[in-house]
Image (cartoon, rainbow, N blue to C red):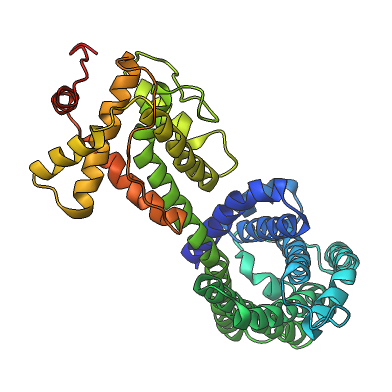
Length: 435
């Protein structure tokens, strides 16, 4: 199933790249998970022709198989350490301050021994590979998956596979037990689905490991026919591909919620950027970061400045969005000091006269008000004074406030210069048409 191998390899590589920044900045659990994913990526790479071609030049027969199995053991070691670290940091994982849950005690005990055990297993399978198995050069046309066929009848094969699949089955059972228990306590649907899929996937991989281990003993002492071996290979490969795919999808599932949230926040930032930027340039010094003026006057200046404002400075897009909203309030208060008292009333009248009603009329009126007040400040048409009236709503969540502010920003973007000048004429503010 070469296509399935590349699909799983691509998904693992994508997750590894996605989690690399958090592994660099994070704690033990983030680094352990990244090591596990990166090692699994390397193991699946060794199952492909591309990966095998990378190591064929060493001259060591079946070296790709050894590297695949070593990477797999490293992955299980990292995965178990990740599971233990998460369990230790999860609220509610303790039945009492002194008596942890049984699953926490089990994984914590395993965690103390996983690194030395993995090192012992890796050393053991390496020794058996080089000194226990037949080192006769293998024909180049032999398929990689026929490792057991090539070494059938060799007792050392059973020992070699015990090092691989014994560790594999143990870690899968511990992780599956932990994820199945944690799935019942998950607070969000995405996390519950992800943990359930990971438990199901790791369960299939445990069955695969046990079947392969039993088959390895049979092959080592009572080699079956080639047809029987082929049927077994296809059946166990199906378990491997299905389990790996389900596990990777489960690993990605909780991340999709984060990705969607970041995409929505970025969309909101792009929608608010035009209003925020114009107000910040009209009243400088009130924002934490001055709007970008990179390559001013160039054709691509607007796009470059937008990218710089929207995707830099703050540690996350959510912090950046909250800052945009908060700074918009500060800029609004500054503009109110220069706006005529009747400006909002005239802006509202203009919106109603144009046929807008309800909440849309209010959003359009505020868009007119922002455009007119900004022009007054930019042209110094009025001195600062008492803040002019401007009705404001108070929202319970940032999401609600952002949605409303986006409507105002959209109305502001649609205001024409003639409408702004007409509104200023109505309130008796003279501004040059060349402004």
